[in-house]
Length: 247
Length: 115
Image (tube, rainbow over all chains, first blue to last red; front, side):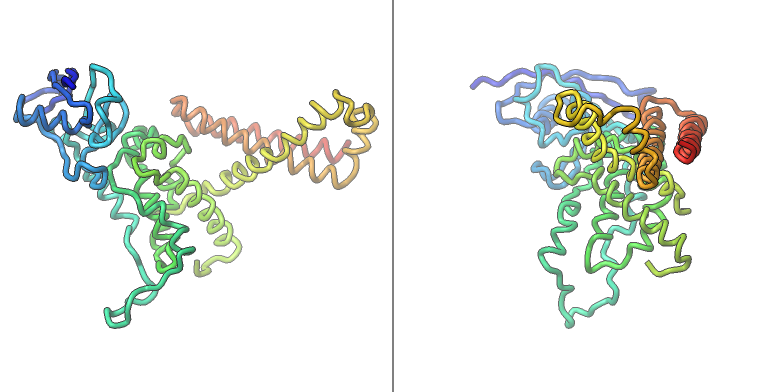
């Protein structure tokens, strides 16, 4: 089959040389089975070596190649050119500062991720000799869905609340906090609640649900946040009734 | 960070939403289908029957619960909807809608006590 020629309009920005971002157009002969990332690699290899973008695995696992494709937050390795029109607009992820071209600054997200302690906090630390922390399939099932997050930040680009207030902790970090809170081996919930149950945590979410729509792994961060709201509401009233109780 | 006080309103919002989701279909079934289609006796919705029904102490309590939860659900829903439409004067919006909900709650309390 002859390749289909697709016009890629790509937002370029080099903060050292340009006042503001500008679009640059590239005509790419695309094969039927290509994804947008293949077209970007073609541009980089054959047309313009200066184009900057992040990618690594090419199989929707690493979460590096997130960008806006025709206005939708998408993994470029998961977006097949056969599903796209002959003109494709590619921009860096919404709601993040541009570092260069399609590369965005992720410091804000990484700070928020860290703030919810996204790791197991066990009751007692076990030595290697003592073996693993046991868990039943039923206990695993409770949170397994929320472990599938690849930190691609598409949910932050889709979230109107994060666009409105960048202090919002945001979907992925809150979903991951929920993932550890639901883990039977974890006792870190109280420590996470200071961030999770604050005004800028789950309570900033107005449940638009865009995060869950764009999630490439079906994590459903919006669902996680609603579940966390129910649990935190229980906490709030229990704390009123029994001040100083151990949660 | 400080724990939020939003659970106060959100609990009413969540309870109201869940409650009305079950309540509204039943009310539509009785008032919109049951009586008009003759599945229920025509006098079910007569003034006298409804008044007697409402005057029962248990009905008064149930009706107050229904109105209370529903208006607070609506107030919070409207606040969030205003926000989603880009109206950023949240304090004003919240005061108006929660104020209306509070007034409606009081009116319902008084009317149901006196009826």
